Structure formats: C-alpha cells, structure tokens
Image (cartoon, rainbow, N blue to C red; front, top):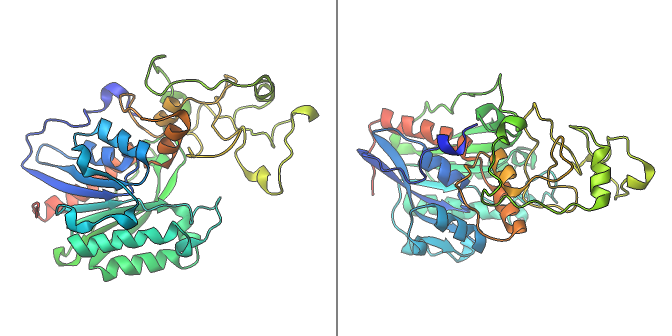
Length: 356
C-alpha cells in the first residue's frame, strides 16, 4: 500500500501533451476521482471538470481536495441535474448507488428508489457521447435478477462497446477484501474491441491490515478515536483476531441477542493483522465499525481510510458519522488508478485526443 509520502500530489503539475476531461455522477468524496488523477504518465492524464453528488459533506470534501471550482461541484439530486448547463467531456464516471443491489439490503434492484438511478448515467452518455465511461457497483448486482443485463443492454444501446469485470481489490494493492463490478465502455466508432482490464498486482501477496495501519500520526486528519464503553471493551477482550461476537466464546452476560439472521454479520469482528481487512462499510449500528486486532477499540476514520487506500493528506469534511459514510461508500483510489491507467493505454494505443 502506498503511504502518504509515496502518493503524488492530488493535482500534480504535469507537462502533458494530452488531458482527457472527465465528468462524474455520484462522485461521493472522490475515490474514483483520486484514482483518475493519480493515473497517467508524462504524455497524458485525466482532469475532472464537473462532478455531481447529493451528499453535501461529500461535495465539501471533494471541493477541499481537488483543484476544481466550487461551482463545478454540483451538490444536488441527480434527477434535478440539468445536463444542458454542463461542459462537454471526454469520459464519464458514474458509480451509481448500490443500496438496492447490496446483499445486505432489501434487494429491490432497478425497481428501487436508488437502483434505477443508473438511468441518469445512460442519459449522460447519450447527451455527451464521451469517448469512454467507467461505471461501478457492488458485485451483488450480478445476482440481482436480470438487472445487470438490463444495465449492460442500456449501455450498448447508448452506443458503447462494454467490458465488465469483477474486481477483487485486495489483488490490486488495496488492503481490503472488497469486490466490485467495474464496467468500462468505449464509443462504438472508436472500434476498441480488445480492451484489457489491469492484471492483479498483489494476488499472491496482498497488503495486510498491519502494513496498512502502521505509522499513522496521532494528529492526522480524521483520526479521532471512539470512546468505547466498559462493556464493549470487556467483550472485545474475549474476541480473537478474525472472530466476531457470534463466533467468539463469550461469557453469557456479554453475548448479543439479535433478530434471526443477524449472526451472519460482522458485528464486533476483529481484523486479522496478517490479512487484508474485511469490507469497509459506510453505515451500520453498534459493533459494525471494524475492530483492531490487539487494541480493544474500533478503528478511527483515518484507519478506515487507510484500508480504502486514501493517503493521509486527503481530508474528509463533516462529523464522524458523515466521514465514515464517505469513506465506506468510496471506490479505493489505488484500484481506480490502475483501472484508469488501462483506459489511458487503450486511448493512447489508438492515438486518440481530447474532443473537448
């Protein structure tokens, strides 16, 4: 995993011959955007010129960390977004909401309040006709009836050749078992039919939780610790690395009594120091905050950000709960960087230039 010092600046001063301009829907705090900005080489790179998200704190975080005019970070419901007022783009990024596809949700699919929002990505493809797009969602989308097929058909009907792939981000330098569907598409007239998603870089030697969480400054941004109750501390003393509140041998007075099915969750689950973390989530009640393997406490938001591969100088704006949500909902920047590098390779192999 890259440490803060190993990451390049968020807005590097490149003497590049070619900058491909990006627009992004459902941008969140900027995990995909950071990956795109870290991608590139001495000849080409990416730059966001407008983004949209409905979460006000996430928009504030994006504005704080990227060199983009505040008025180009449009904080609104995507259904109220007027595409006519947005600048042309070379690439569209959209990690459409996963709530209705997640295996831990109600699984209403594209009929749900959030599942159908992918359509605004399709409308943006039709409106702007960018050279390419990168779309992201949870791997549970593949088992949500025929929803994935419907979405892929809509992308192809908009005029794109698509390349879907399930990424296991622990195989791409991210210290976390996080599996997501990434769909890269290129406009049909470009005749790119041989795109290759990046090959795994850490399949045989994944980055561990111990490696990811070492050497964090006490005064790092978003590093406030949670005050654990005496009961939680006592419970954690009985939970070994890799165990949770239901697999550990807990005294009766520390056992949890929850509704049927809850025992499959990761409640009070401790990390295993020599393996990647389990999936970082953006919400959840008590016991879902990810727990240190040896210290009897929940992780800080900065530690969770490390597990998502964010550098320490990426500052999240908002209260602790809001920051937790922003981190958990993000695409790991290190994984996104490798995806955008592969996109750039495909564009350069055809000697394509910005159309903006």
